Length: 182
Ligand code: PRP
Ligand code: MN
Ligand code: MG
Figure 1: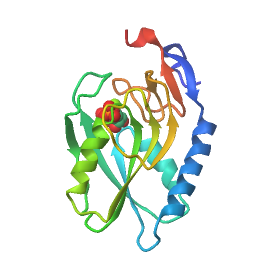
Figure 2: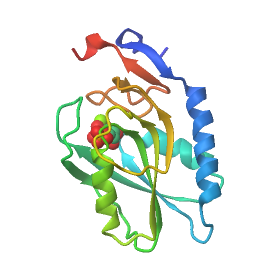
Figure 3: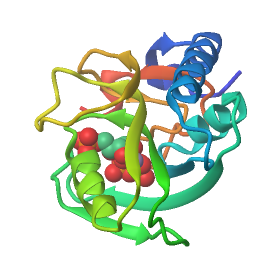
C-alpha cells in the first residue's frame, strides 16, 4: 500500500513495534526527569521528525519542542563528520534541560558534533534519546541515555530516515533493497 514495495528487501521494525518502544522510552525519560521545568525536546531535522512527534505525544510530562536542521557532508550512504547547520534553534537554551531527539546513530559523528555545539550554549543538562543505533558502525565514543533499538549495520530507511530524500514517509523502518544503491 505504501508504493515502495519493490525497493525494500524487508520490514525491519514494524509500526506497532516502533510505537510500543516509543512509549517505553517516553516513560523512562519522564521517570528520570525533574519536573521543575519542562524539558526542551530538540528534534534533529529531518530524520527525527516522525520520532519526535510520536515521542512528544507519548511523553507523560509537558515538554517544549525545538527544531534544528543539520546535515553531514559526505556521500548519501556515509557520514563524514563535517556537520553543517541548515536551521539553528530559535531560542536560547541557557539553563534549560535539553533532550536531543535523534532518529539514528550511525557513525555517531553528527551527534558528537551536536553535543559539543549545544554544550557551548550553557544548558542545565543535555540528554540524548535515539530511536536507532548501529553498534557496528559507531566510530566515536558518545554517551546515549536512551536508545530504542540496536540494529545491524545495514541500509535502513523509513520513519524519517531517507536515502536521497526518499522513504522518510514510510510508517515503519525497512531495509533498502541492494539493487537501489549498488
Ligand atoms: C542522518 C541521520 C542522523 C545522522 C546519523 O542525518 O538522521 O542525523 O545521519 O549519522 P552519523 O551517526 O553517521 O552522523 P542526515 O545527515 O542524513 O540528514 P537528515 O536527517 O536530514 O536525513
Ligand atoms: Mn539526521
Ligand atoms: Mg539523511
